[in-house]
Image (tube, rainbow, N blue to C red):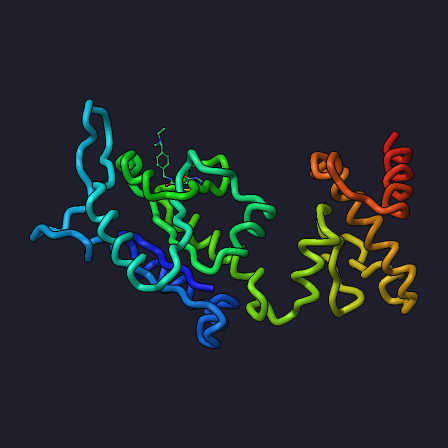
Length: 250
Ligand code: 9D3
């Protein structure tokens, strides 16, 4: 899969995609990420990418021509037309189903918004606007990196452990169960009891462990994210465990 990112902070995006699982996938050529500096598509001496809004008001707007020229150049790089995304607070909320849909595209172009926004006419070249959540950021670079990370994980071969990817998308809809590693007991401080790993995890009884994890995942989801249980596809065992948990809570 190929991503083209258009940004006024190319070093920030290049630096971030080079790290971790995505960086490794780029090295192996499972992914291609090409970062384009929007200023390279300006034609004036000062490489200006923004201007004042018509009609007045605070802040600046990204000028349309550099973005149009960047898109023309990127679309000319390969045969097929890529899907063009604009990061924007007005966009579709990024959820795992949206990530799954995006991961089925062979090419994504990510235009990173900045300042108050982009000239409205740029939207004639955009297939979809995407927001990563209802909080105010300073621009679209971090959202673009979030989109790349989430989408890239679904590209076969990017994540080493295919099982963890499958569990995240399938068995999920629930929050994760608690995790522990060695040692089995650690001192918590002078005046309190040692912190112990739950006995069931040390028991070697894999059926019991699986049931405990399911129960913990359900209990956490019920306590912290009950909204996830509303359209949840729970199996028989999960429905029974959920009824028991609800009964316990009163
Ligand atoms: C303070 C400016 N706001 C006035 C109503 C509008 C505004 C414009 C530009 C708010 C944020 C931004 C910059 N943000 C993004 O470009 C952005 C974003 C975000 O802020 N939150 C979540 N997802 C995204 S995707 C792009």
